[in-house]
Image (cartoon, rainbow, N blue to C red; front, top):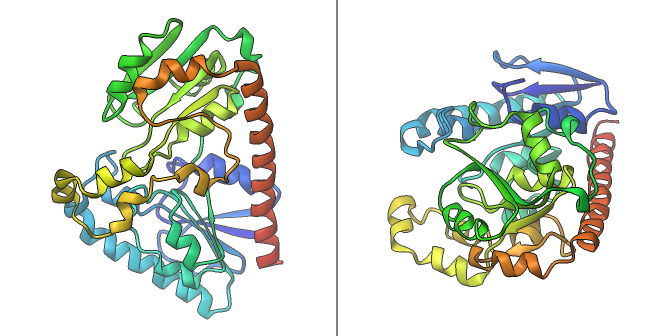
Length: 329
């Protein structure tokens, strides 16, 4: 049996459903470890400390909440060490960290780590660290409608908050007939589409527009599009974009130079996070959206991407299963 320890959060965590699905072949004992109780063998901790920095309100409040964050991070590391001291094998699902500011020092005391938001040096320094794809909205997958790509009425669609490059994205997307978009005021907006409505939108979409998140090009929208059978058009950054961020004075003033690699993380992100055969169309400038869509054979691209996605899911699920079995049993 696996002791699945939810560090401070359980069902309120965005990843709750997807992590339980990943572990479906194991017997699970859920532990809400609010009092740092030492559990038995085979411990997997699910931790999202970024929520502390965000203040639970979807906004980044680094300076205001950093003191509390450092205390909680040390508590987590001490807890992992305490488990190891009594001979417990420990795995970690490290979710969040989209701002790339969390320390990975505690990885050295874990038997394996699956972390969201690909971080090159974390994988290089800790051989047992694996990339964990972002998850779908809770309840989304079960609401997906299986519909052939040629029967889908929307040429393109987008649902989410407009910010940063997304204004430019919508500007050029609206020039392409047959699209549909729904805007929200914040991440996971309660006034936005629910899981059923969002699944219906993507299930009726040929091309799903997938702009980057706050600090990384990675976003849940890519996986949700793949699950719904749409073709994700994924925002990507080339080396020129990386250098522009690296030497952008405004960004340096606002965020400092605490980690020079931070500004280069989005360069070739998809190839590093998944593999060199990542098949989704990449877009480097949203003004090229119409030309990109026109250049894609919808039927063949859809078949290629869906074949890859099924293979990837199978291999990733096997990686998780074998990693756990080889560690605990």
